[in-house]
Length: 413
Image 1: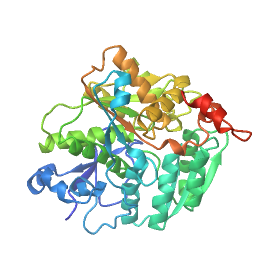
Image 2: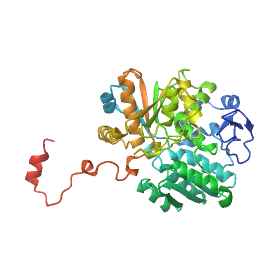
Image 3: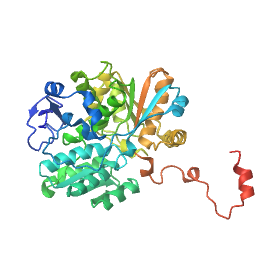
Image 4: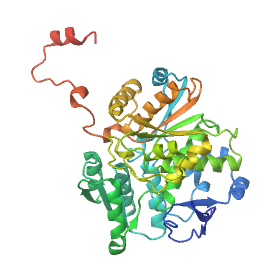
């Protein structure tokens, strides 16, 4: 198979760029990968996917790879779409689902983006990579970079969860902690040293292919629901590639005629009120988001004070009839604990913010009890070691336990 990619297109002004060479951004803004959808429609039927391995690569006609592209893979399979009946009942929803991205190779949805981005970087002969990260992106680039035999540099805020720091160093990445810095400060370091160090900048949306990997979340969701889309998608939003990628996937599927209905889901962007630039821009009716001052949230993936794809996120939200909503920062830890203990699914704090967003939207009537609602769990809770109040996580046993006393105390709790 030759790739069906026709060109790259500037998301800000529609300028066309060739896809047969390394491209980054245009006028400082991201690029779309565009396909010959007419040719795909003539040569592929959605039923074809059923006979292919259950990985993101099953959608190869809608991806930038071709037969002669060496795939850089860690075995990233389709993630489960789980009916969350008990949590749905607590929220007041009868048709509530969780798409669990925590089961990907690096424990988060970042596996999708970097599987694709590193594959294409390898295809173009790039061997030195760098990225700023709030945590999971760094671990994913380190892992996929190691798989490709590349040299990887990762820059992260010094308060990034320890698990993320360790996974980067174990994968061989040269890992640097930026004291008193945010991901935007880390991004500035990567950008300013790019010429001198000769690395390729894998910052969010600074190259076009990470988005294509994230797009497969939308393709999978459509296939798992029998080519029908849900009413509402709740998505935690930092840099926003997942939300943007899914909206792109849905648009392509609709143009291909593969969807059973033209109904598109309402895209809900969930943030924390400790860092909510997308919410603020949405509420003001603006297309571009101002940088958020003093960004602070326990959901480190949401701590992105300025997203390069802000207008792409806001366009998708508005086109879908969705919204952007900020959860109360002080409630995120409790919502995470409640969600995990209710369903047993490894809900990360970023997705817990979306549980809180759902509560508010249901309370004000923006989500109806019979709506089919999908929450994306973008990462594994165990990657946030030390998260929350340790006294509430465990009961410390500092002396030998008397079975009779223990049974009397806890048997009815």
